[in-house]
Image (cartoon, rainbow, N blue to C red; front, side, top):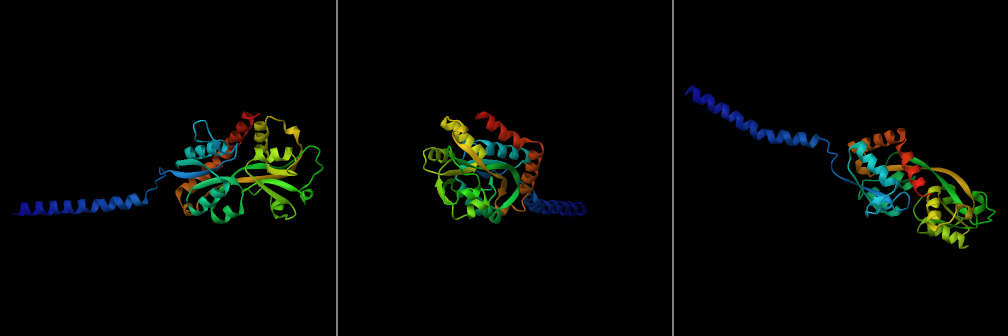
Length: 258
């Protein structure tokens, strides 16, 4: 009888431990970090930063950077092309996980900036023979600008400048060449792509007004503030910049369109 009682107690203990084990496992699973779940990265649909590739998938500088960020961080990122204004809203509200574009006050206020990606030259392109030389010279002039980006605070704040919103850099330059605009503001690389598409030389236009550089930032949605992937993506971006990978992606795109 003593033997049977000991056996029964042993079996009861095993049963108790078996019932407890799933709860212990579940607690451990809750504390584990899962970076395999795919996140959506919104890509602005402006060449050479974002465009449809030959396979119908997002291509360009930003998709290449996001792909490398995903590899370095271990956080799965799926890219999709999105208009600039919509990307701002979707990352701010959490409909998308990440985006990158020129520095913006609204994203700085409503999303989490993980770091600077690059610094891009901002220029005002002018028609042949133009005598405009400074930002102040644009007062009273009609300037073509893309809806969404913030290129220069001084330009944005100057109510004397007539902002005419257009769809893409090529439209800016086509209207400029036809005399429908006095100037066009944008990123240096964007205009080089546009003149290449138009099969003309940049020398078709007057010397641009250089407004200095503006940084491109990487943002994630607010809910990711304390997530492991936010830290891993931020570190991956630092590593990419240190290794010169971001600069190579940009120079490769520029050389491909010369």
